[in-house]
Amino acid sequence: MRTMAAKAAKDGFGELLDTARHEPVTIARNGRPVAVVLSVDEFERLKALEDSWWAAKADAAAKEGFLGRSRSDRLLREILNARP
Image (tube, rainbow, N blue to C red):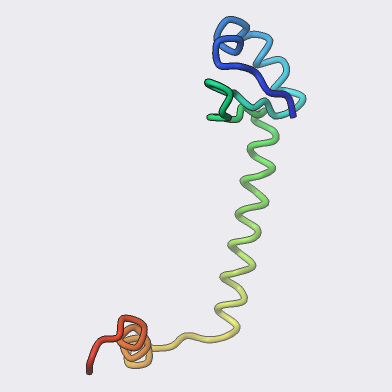
């Protein structure tokens, strides 16, 4: 992954965009990374990956079943150390 200083990214915005189409670019300010610029295709790929991950988590939770109100209330009281 390439890194560009914020001023270089500002002054060479076209170069930044061209580079980001091929690989993510880290933007650094005062030597510290503050942002990453990436292509729309890469963003959409990452978004789809995240959506798949959450869908798998939801499927797993649905297969395990649901607690119901009384068990949920009891669990929350235990977690919060609340007295019944």
